[in-house]
Structure formats: C-alpha cells, structure tokens
Image 1 (cartoon, rainbow, N blue to C red):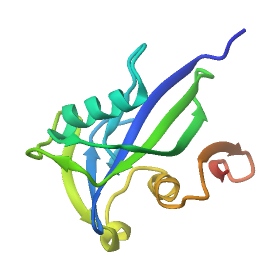
Image 2: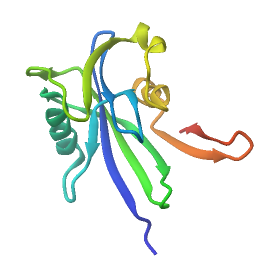
Image 3: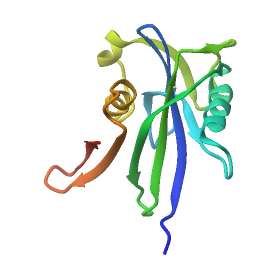
Length: 150
C-alpha cells in the first residue's frame, strides 16, 4: 500500500535581519511563522509557493530557493511534508489575509514573540546550509515530538 502524503510549502521572506511572519489564527497551529500553504495537485512546488505568498501577503516573490524539508506523520498516519523556501526578492504592497496578520520581526526579537510550535527548528533548516531535512519523532519518555535534523 502506498503511503499517503500532504504537500505544503513555507517561505522565509527576509530583508536584512527582518523576517516576514504570519500571526496564524487557526487553532491547530497558532503563533508567528512563515507564510505558505498547500501545494495543489499537479502544481510545481515553486509555482505553489509563489501563489501562496501572493494570496497570503499580497507580495510577489522571485527566485525562491528550496532550503530543505520538514516532515512528520499526522494522526491519520499521513506523511505531512513541508517544503521550505527562502528569498529576499519581493515586490508589491504587503497585506494580511484571513490566515493571519503579516508582520516584520527583527531576528533579535524572536525570543520575545509568540511563535508557532517548532518555529526555531524550521528557521534552522532555512539558515543552516548543512541541514536539508527536519523530521519529528515521538519520544514516549518526554511525551513530546522531538526534532531530528539531517
């Protein structure tokens, strides 16, 4: 039996030390994180992230670079794959969407902000060239999902 997968993409849009983050309002994953969304059937991942960023931020991004993958198993035993991109090339008028408010946050302020679960793990994949994959495995002793970097 083939494994079922959900494909999504997030993009780290940056301007110097500032990161564009979305203050997500959905109950399943609240807090500040990178904007993005689901890849549609048959859609190339680069096309998907450009479309999602336009829909959620109003910005048009150029040359998004794939940094790596983040993945975990859902409660329905599906593989949830997040393709992580980054770019500092964008244009347009910034706006928010029904997904959440868009805000520029200086990296030095991240520790003081309400970040989405696993944000710093995701940021590490985007920042460190030697890491290409982030997987979460459940640790029964700690009763928590633990990040494993490859």
